[in-house]
Length: 94
Image (cartoon, rainbow, N blue to C red; front, top):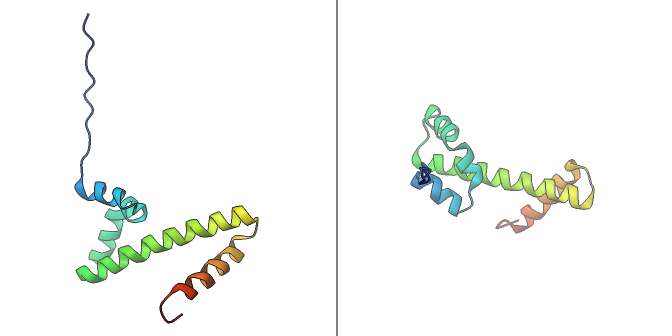
């Protein structure tokens, strides 16, 4: 008796694949809502890209704060201050 092969339907959205490869999960996970937000605000392509990058950076910062809070067993508020201070020192002119 032959076994029936399962047909796996893969969604191959090239943008989703690229965002995953670049490890931009903050953008990938919220892309539709972020693009809707940009459209409602009539943002230019450049402004939309800035919005997407800001959200990705915010997601990364939040993850870093949580890791620090868990690793050092300090409150999230203290971790936020540590991360913000460290990032300010890394910025040009900071």
